Image (tube, rainbow, N blue to C red):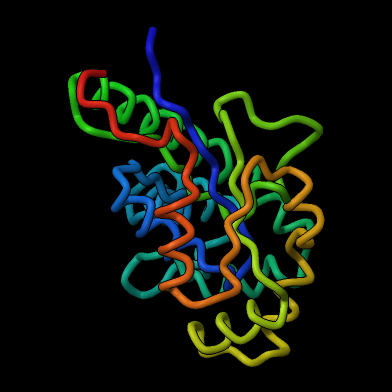
Length: 213
């Protein structure tokens, strides 16, 4: 059966993954955002939120019955065991939803929707990989820039201090680790115009939308 290629898009904090996704969507890519999925699986009244609160406690809920993300983020940042407990709950739910969305995109394409490829944004892909690329992926594309640029962009975007961003970067894979897995590197060390030009001229030949499926 004919199928679209599935590409994982990854990169460190402040590398510009969201910008790249927006531009790839303009080239007819179907975008799946695992950060958005991670938020959806712990919406109020969801099975994911119930499991999380059973593990961490009712004090991780806000007065509105939503997940207190800031408190949970602080907890797992300080406690690796708690981080593992959180991942054990969330990762299977995120994977299940992601795979369902990939299949839905494949079905849309087979029915004639013009889609060039399926791009799955997975910020922490390399951090969660073992010895092999996940079997649902055809390629891994890494959005790359130097660490000073990451630091500047993330600080401006998130309103956090340089020290806070540096702490996050230390918990992520290094540039070298990400680049080791890259089937394609997207250099985002320049401005958005340079990035757009790069994507317009250097996408692989197969990255063309297919009207017939």
